[in-house]
Image (cartoon, rainbow, N blue to C red; front, side):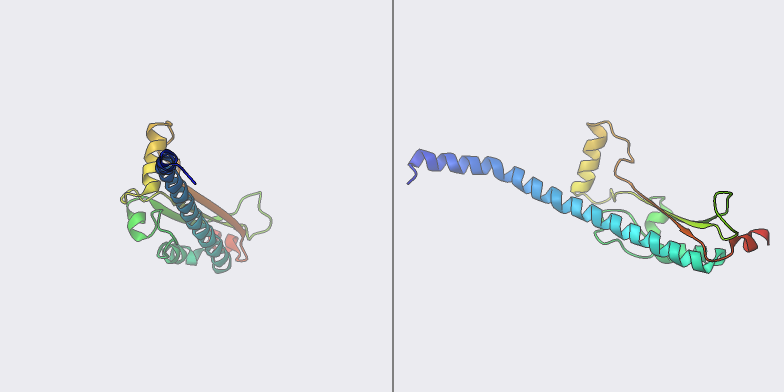
Length: 162
């Protein structure tokens, strides 16, 4: 059985430890949300590259608009037409016919870029500000960049000549 002073000590220790415990749990949750958005962007890039490798140059702009209209899972990062117009989210689909590629088909390169949504006040924005101010990190420290390259099944050299 605990004496009276020991019970008070336990409550004080609990009061000191519990905020750190909640910060730790929230950190895990936000890290999971950021990973979820990264996985969503990675899946979009892969799907877009696959569709672009079949469709050719005429479908690239349609694919960019289609994948830009999709939502991210957690929403910690900027994505969508509004973010695109502000320069916070970008998607590029481009052909790559160089000497390094074999044959006339070349590769299709899909690049996606997204930044943390700073309009919301959440742990991710606070963490980014802390990294920039106190650690001297670059403002692009938590930006997501995904590049996906896929062999084009469509003969890109035909469209390049015309």
